[in-house]
Amino acid sequence: MMFDVNRLEKLKALACKFGYVFKNPELLNKALTHKSYTNENQGCCIKNNERFEFLGDSVIDLVVSRYLMTRDGDMTEGELSKIRAQVVNEQSLAQFARELDIGSYLLLGKGEEGSGGREKSSLLANAFEAVVAALFLDSSFDKVYEIFLGRYKEPIDGLTTEKRIVDYKGHIQKHCQAHILSNPQYHLICESGPDHAKKFKVRVFILGEPYGVGIGRTKKEAEQYAAKQSYEMLMARQKQRV
Image 1 (tube, rainbow, N blue to C red):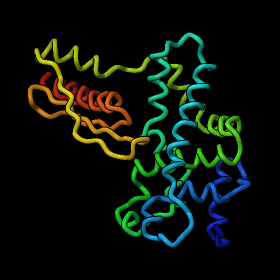
Image 2 (cartoon, rainbow, N blue to C red; image 1 turned 120 degrees about the horizontal axis):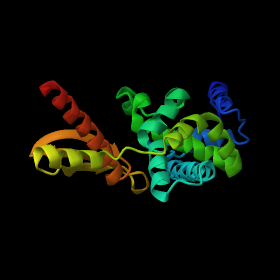
Image 3 (tube, rainbow, N blue to C red; image 1 turned 120 degrees about the vertical axis):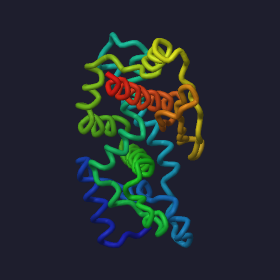
Image 4 (tube, one colour; image 1 turned 180 degrees about the vertical axis):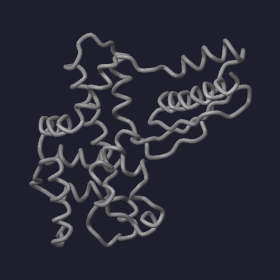
């Protein structure tokens, strides 16, 4: 694909934020091409970034997993998995994308553009995964590892230093059994996205009353976010009664 000068300069500017120069800038351009753009421009030869999202998701998982294994040899598999889930989730990846201003580099269709697509967390998180895939394909795993940790080592270290991830499902279960005499119920509201990038939305009900909502890449992750929100709601109500 041929780039105009302005597009090529934008791609170089984004790559510069990683401290990297692409040998094949077409890879980065593809990573930033949303399916809404290709759907509205079917005559163009570029493909959308969905396959890159799939690859980038796996690369980020491996980068974080490898680092956590070297960071602290005393952590259990469960602790490692919980920390990785906090780093590699839609909220975190979308924040990484915002810090790089990835939204301004995206190729979007007019409909997605008009609906605020450049600010959507799900779209930004997917784009970040795709950009990581482009880096991987243009260089190597070791280079991606170096670049990723160069930017995100500090927040990961913050989580590993705590060594303890709050189990909100456990907290809310104990609270409900002690004070409400009923267990919380988790209802799956919907699931969306392609098979490699599913999103689950879950709501908590207590005694039939709706409480927190959580969104995650697995039902368990969504339940934890919903439980966290619900637990905070319960604690706020408890303080009001005191």
